[in-house]
Amino acid sequence: MRPQQKHHQASSVAQLATLLLAASTGLTSATPVHKSKQDLVLQRRSAGPQLSHHVDRRQVASQITSANSTASVAAACDCGFIDLTEGADPTQVWNSLFKADFVNMKTKELGNGFRFMRNAVQRVNTATARAFDPKNAGLCNDGLCLYVNPSSNQEVPSAGVFTKDTGYHFGNYYAEIKIPPSAGTVSAFYVYKNDTNEVDMEFNNPSASANLSIKNTVKPQIYTGTQADPSTYKKTYMPEGSDWASDFHTWSFQWNPTYVSYGLDGVYDNVINVNVPQAPGVVSFSHWSDGNPNYSGGPPTEATILTFRRTWAFWNDTRASMPCKVASSPCKLDARVPTGSTEDATSGAAAQMLAAAGRVGLPMLVAITVSIAFLSFA
Image 1 (tube, rainbow, N blue to C red):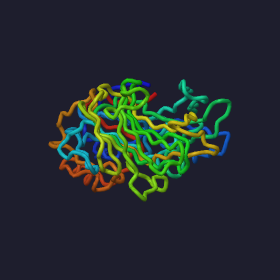
Image 2: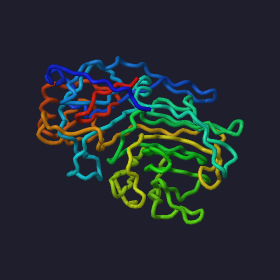
Image 3: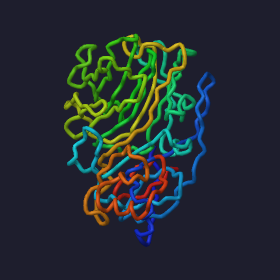
Image 4: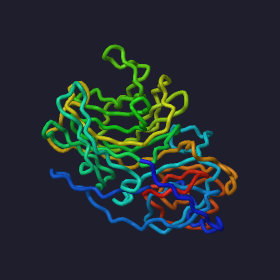
């Protein structure tokens, strides 16, 4: 999963000014997705040209997996980032930004930035396995669609993707998610290194219950007998009268060294401060079922769709630093603001570069980090 690292040198940061605020548009790419044999039809999008400009790694470093224009990456935010998303600490400075706009992303961009899950998982208390297959995941009209299809040969066709970069660490993580309208599957958003180092949000609906919730956990998870201990297990309940399957909602978690705070649509009401993961991992999205009546339920009798519209994160990459050679203060960003908007940044240096460069096209998936090597994904 480790991307191939390449160091590029450039003679002048002036060449990079056209990108202005790569940080606020972060995006990446992906591999072609194959159509399912069932009803799964994923809308393909043509891929854009690869970003090939050189940058001065002393001033800027970007994990750029692809681009839909010839825009360069400027070191506008080498003093870091402040997250303007609702519920975030406006005094916290992060050295890295990640953003993926699945609605506007191209298929090739998705594959350059993410890997598709391809494995089977069977628990001891289930009769069928979760069979993750790339053909069940891909871009659709509403974003990134992950399908669970009816079971076959003791397996439930499931789907998942995860970032190629394995360095996602303490930070604020977000995803705009629309859950399936039917019961029998698990929808998941998480940062994962291994089964003892995970921050996880999962929605399950085994029996079309009216008392629905997102399960917030860390790994390792503590159990009392067969019951999840509340020290590592919290629930976020659906507000009365709302329908999570009718529109997108923002799932989020604020992962810190001593606690994880979990939120829904900017409201954070669950905190876990036991067994907090300490190692970086991959950002992951999955949709699965194994027929367990006590958790996933199902399997479904028809194709079931989980949709991710957009994801973003402000985090501290342990490989990065903040030299502050271009900017004098952090860039204040709302990662949901469209690319090229004059509201992309409110910091002086970034705003000046934006005004000078005008509106520019940027890649659909970018991870911006300060002062590490320029990366390209093989």
